[in-house]
Length: 345
Image (cartoon, rainbow, N blue to C red; front, side):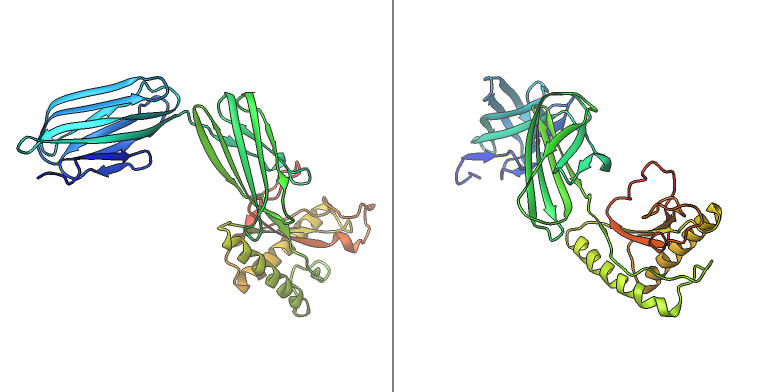
């Protein structure tokens, strides 16, 4: 069988397996980690003879030449490309062979390869400065020259900022700052960070989105954590706001959780207030769950330790008797305190 066009240019940079038709199939491994070499694998659909792979690396003229006198039907041979050096390379060349009743076949080949020294991106919420439009991140290995690109998306999925920054002689574990220029108003929902150098690249999607749900405070009876009948409309109104914000997050494939924190004033003992704040936060969190909220809901009590208004002991301060409802893709910061969020099942 003779191919209609025996000379075919194959652009193989992004195609892992190419069926060349009779008589061979080519499979590529073009993007590999450091310590390995890119490869091209040729598998014969029928017996072929005088197979020659002849490639030239465009960067330095380096040659990849391989010859096989025979490759039986169903057999394959793996040919390594290059010397495994970090970075990208481009190869051009030909694959020629003879098959069947002496039929000649050849194909032009163009291949792009990358040997990637893995980069891992480190991030902590405390190193994101939304008010200054600056993100700090870390890389897992040193780099002589690394490029960073940042895209910032708002809570409707719209782009609200971009940033680019170059870093020379970047050390592993050092905090690197990339500013971004806001292009529109909006709460930051998602940040997409891309970093690259001569040896590799990494992509990281950050979800620093967090929103405090406005609400009327539930008035509990003294010493009680039961939500009274007359107080339920307040919680129902907050539930409707929560569901609207959860719908926004889902549209952007952001998994968020609800965190309920309870607080008291300074009337009573510290241990009593701590226990009461936990129980009241649990009551509100449980109410949302019973209403049908399906996302993760967690609660914690802080007693009198996080007042809105600083007061003396045994002071009845309504502003401090409160609960905070926070929707977030990340746990709220601990502010140096040790506590454990408890999940409502």
